Image 1 (cartoon, one colour):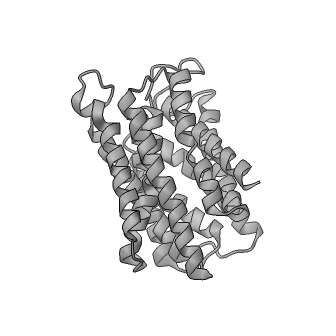
Image 2 (image 1 turned 60 degrees about the horizontal axis):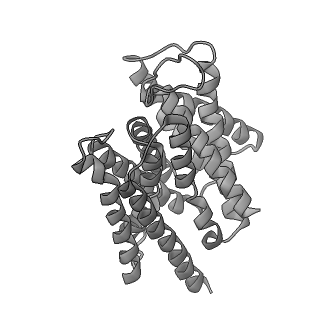
Image 3 (image 1 turned 60 degrees about the vertical axis):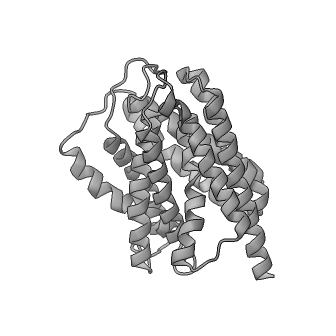
Length: 298
């Protein structure tokens, strides 16, 4: 069942990414007729409101403390997650889906690097090889933006995607610190608790009132994300990480196909090489890291 859950998780994350691209004006093609183009902060707010409503309901019925226990790391998780998601939405808006999705997979690589500082974990020599492989892949992803006049996006968006992945790595590192002190739902809710006030203030300067079906689309951005996170959690609980890791990164393939079919995004040979190289580095690092941890616990 772990493999089924991880595949479902990737599909629901893809659905969210498609909705964000449609609603943010990242494409001239729309599946629902004429819809307004929403600023990124408003999309983050909509997603956060749905996440908070679902998470708060679970906390209430389970009679858990709303603010959790380890507040320092919970706040760290909330702030880093908010920054990561906001920047990720910008990369979805400005770059092809496959590129935005693949860059986000660098998050676990940054987690490994961050762990050397926060958790005092040592990186094996072979892991440095895998990490280097990922960043070589980024060069291929950026090739057209750097050297081709026909590129559809600027190189700066690759950099913003990398920064987003860095903050995702910080969020993951915070979660590692919180495993022993807080319930998963308390960890989840700190993201919307931080994001909602920040994005609400931002919306005072720029806000678009939803019309008609747009209300449903905004609601779905939160629902699809919540389902994706639940499926991913169930997958991690049901199966060994090394087994499900390759299936977790099928999202890049989904994104390539949907980007072409829905948004007519045509990727160059260099981009496909970059996607392959990054995913290879990330998967090998995930499997090797899990093997190391298993030996330590044996």
